[in-house]
Length: 260
Image (tube, rainbow, N blue to C red; front, side, top):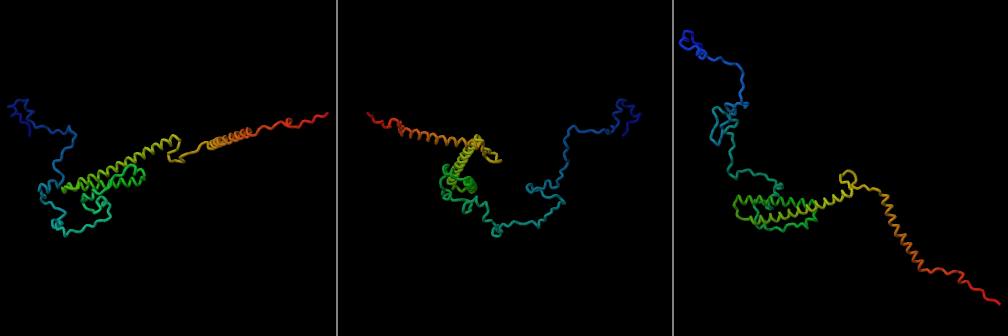
């Protein structure tokens, strides 16, 4: 498009002639004000929109790697199911009861003894306490699993017996914690005494290094010899007291007879 000729522009004001010309394309590079990347005009995923929930099938000319004829069909008859091999010595069987059933009868849950006391646990070793703690943990895990199964089946029985059994187990765990706390305080007190005595608890070298060993022996020998000397002196004094002093020989010498 070109500007109007001069003959035609005579009918228009001259100041409007530049507005009738087409704008020239500007080649000056420009950047958008926002630095955010532009959104894609279309999705790159070819499987977008294919959903079994919304009943949207495949697109036209879309092929799959699996044919409908090769898809396996589920076996609904339980008699035709293959038997699953289960390890009879599997570790997870410890979280079930002795009969390996889903639920335990209330009589079996109620048949339990009393909780361990702190006095009884004080005589146990570290290994025994550790083993007893994890027995309690496994038993509580079994009770929690059966409680969940009873709620799911709406069984209506066994809750009271299970709660009483778990209550007894909690008392045992509390006694174990009490025993371990006492042992920790005893160990800490012994450690403080060892530090005050100057023992080396770093684990490098001997724990106790004797100092001035010969001087200590000499002092102990002097302490032992002193009572013996005192005892000897005392015996001598008593002997002198018992024996009377000897008389002068001049007093017992016979006098000469008188003559004359």
